[in-house]
Length: 236
Figure 1: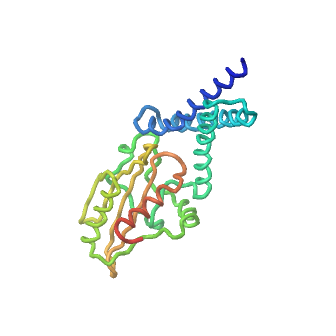
Figure 2: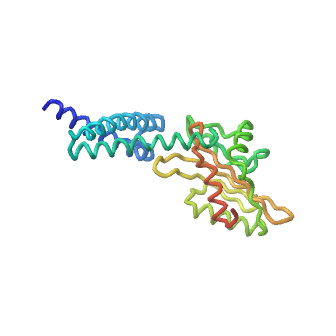
Figure 3: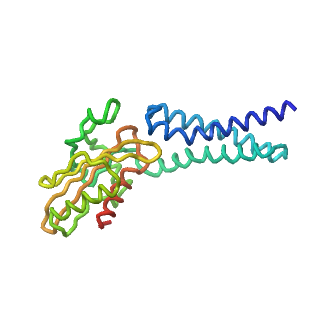
């Protein structure tokens, strides 16, 4: 009898922990928790859910569980699989959070300032040490050159930025610059983007820089954002 109560209690706690894993992102996104606290909750809840899920799985193997145990085992193992997948992805990409198609002369943020990004965010200056890591991790990421004249290319770039759902902070057609902020779904992290257009003999070169506000790595989000942006323009 006592064993059954313990099993039910652990199963219930496992389900609660699994729910907290799913809630960590929205709690950060809507400002209930800071990003450090939110990530801490995510990791701790996932570990507890994983341990509980394994316990419930053992109970089921011994044919002592019920429907609650089945649900807890599934929820707990699924919850621990989420951070496991994130860790695996993090090992696949370089541990940097500032990606640019021009590492020699990266587009600079002008309208987006440190004050706008808020306290505790990463410096806006580009770290030259990222260049080699980026080249190794994203060897195919480079500037996009289109045959359009700068004014036509600018309109396409601005349209692509809006189609991506970015919040446009500044747009200057004459200078060939767009600055915007993108919000990562679920987590609610804010990343900043600057687009620079330069006239060339072949048409227009479009460089992009995408930078996270917090953290040391980005799980490949910034590089994917740039690639998706180019695809919206009709390039890569």
